[in-house]
Amino acid sequence: MNLNVGKEVTALRQMTLSELRRRFAEVFGEPTQARHKDWLVKRIAWRLQARAEGDLSERARKRAAELANEADLRLAPPRAAKGTKPSNGRTATASVPPGPDGRLPPPGTILTRPYKGRIIEVRVLPKGFEYEGEVYRSLSAVAKAVTGSHCNGFHFFQLSNMNRGDA
Image (spheres, rainbow, N blue to C red):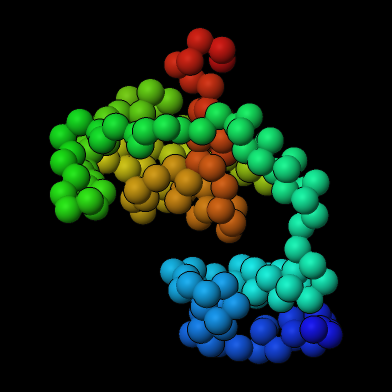
């Protein structure tokens, strides 16, 4: 089989997701649940190239088997969290009420931080944070409002090490 990998990849990239999933089934002989277009393109191109130029050498297969045998593999699935009961082989989930985060000071505390020549002040509320008259659900949301880009709120307000003994 003479394969031009570049042309194949170009053709694959122009396919829709459903076309890629059909092509995957043709190439691998089984359907896929994957919906990530780039991943499908890479996997299909890899298989086509392996068919055209030959698969892994026997030496590489043996080494892969050795590595797999040495790996720490989980022999049993993880235990279900307390209060959850799997049914019909599906994973059951339960909502856990969030407890107070140990990194946060008590409600009513004002967090201050200098940022670009001004002082940012945020009041800790029982459920949220108040900044410039608006209530935010998280410190990260406040940090995003301040900076214009996402960043970790605990890091932005330098609360990451509070109440851990290493502050």
